[in-house]
Length: 80
Image 1: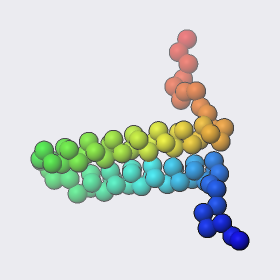
Image 2: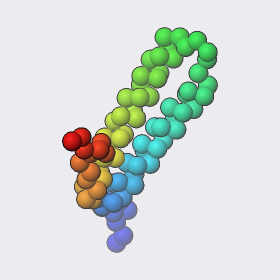
Image 3: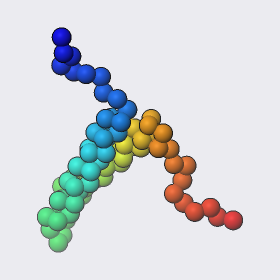
Image 4: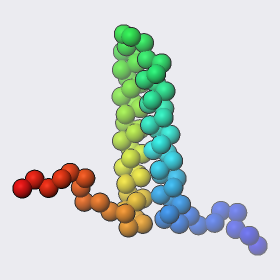
């Protein structure tokens, strides 16, 4: 019998996490494109929610990347 829900590997989880992060960024971009010249409190709240989603999905993507061996210590150049 074929398993209808096969186990998902680390690479697939990484692909899904990257897609979710990309979607979050695209939603933020779409919001910024339609933002009025003078944002109201609802716009500020929506932007905060969108940024929170971006941060959460980035963290999930980074954790999934770590799980497949794509660990990066820092992108900052060494000072010294």
